[in-house]
Each structure stands twice: as C-alpha cells, then as structure tokens.
Image (cartoon, rainbow, N blue to C red; front, side, top):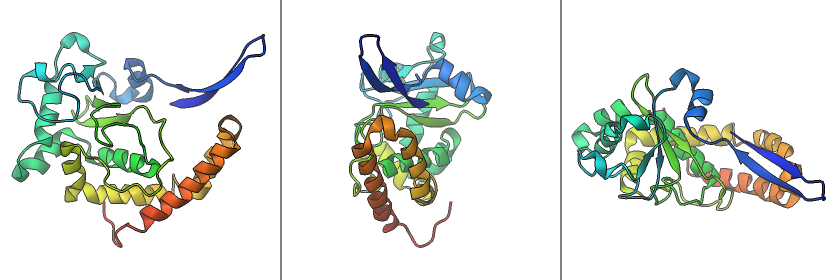
Length: 239
C-alpha cells in the first residue's frame, strides 16, 4: 500500500515522494473486505505506552496508548485488555491464552519481515511501543499486526535476530511455539520474497525514483543480510 509519486509544477519545480495508504476504516474495507468491521488500534507512546504490558482490567489504563481508529463510538477496549493479559499470563496457561487471541503465525511473520529488512525505526519491533497497528478480526477475535513508518530499513545487515526488547514481545517471540515459526518465515523470506531475483524486480521498478546509489546499497544489503541470517538458521525447521 505504498507507491512512488511524481509532482511537477509549471514553474519547473519537480519532486518525487512515496505515497502511503492511510491505515483507517477505509483501508480495512479495501484491503480486508472479508474481515471488515473489527477493532483497529494504533499503538502510541501516550499514557502507559502500547508496549503490550498488562495494567489490570481497568480499560482507562489502555485508552490513550492504544488509539482506537474504528468503532470509536463503542468506547470498548476490552479486547486490548484481553490481549495484554494473555501476553503476560502465567507460563502454564500462556500458550492456551495467546492462541485464543493472537494469529501466532501472522505475528511471527510480521517480526520476521522486520528482521529481514533490519528496521531501525523505534517501534514494537525494537524497544518502543509505537508505530504499529493492531487489528482484531471479527471472524475469530484474533489480533494481527500491521506495520507503519518503514522509512529506516536496509541499514544494518548484521543486526541480531530476535531483536525486540519489549518484555511481552521478547517473551512471545522466544517461546518455542513461536520461535519455530519465526525461523521458518526467516528462511522462507530469504529464499523467496527477499531472494536476489525477487528483489531485482523491485529494484528495477524503483531505480529511476530511488537513484542508482541507493539501489546499489539496497542490493548489497540484501546479499549481506541474507548471508547473515542463513548462517544462523537451524539445520531443521518446522512450522
């Protein structure tokens, strides 16, 4: 949901920029027509912050941090409370709790994509509850993650894997159930979506807009990042 745009004026002014599709109720209706009508939240630094910590059952503790984008008139943050409770539940009930409210495979892939791109933006992928969206699917009540602010990627080819530092996210991603899926998606991404042939197609499309210097840097990053990740992949992967 992003594309390069060109803007020219009669006086000779010319510029190019990236146009991003806004994530709101229209985005949900367009991109997820079969799952529209659910609760969409934007994670922010306001209030207690949207780092997925559990602050008890009082919904007022979550309202500022998790900005409700859709269904605001209902003023109901109970699903966010359940999500945070599940992510901070005792070990003996942890898997059961998160499976009921999280699309685990989608979350694992979300973090794998950020890992492959080495996103340097302060966000839930790193150490800050910010710059991401949560969407609760009405069909099953499970949350998926949606990215935002991806303008700081392709920079650190040897950045460590399992990068998130937020306690709730670190615990989630390192749990054996989730970690195996995270490894699987890392392997699949560097073999397919992030492979040299696939990336070259994209670079060909943006060469004029991004410039030769940047395209060359992205090409070098892809090769080095893929080697770095591949060297750490387990010899046997299951998902």
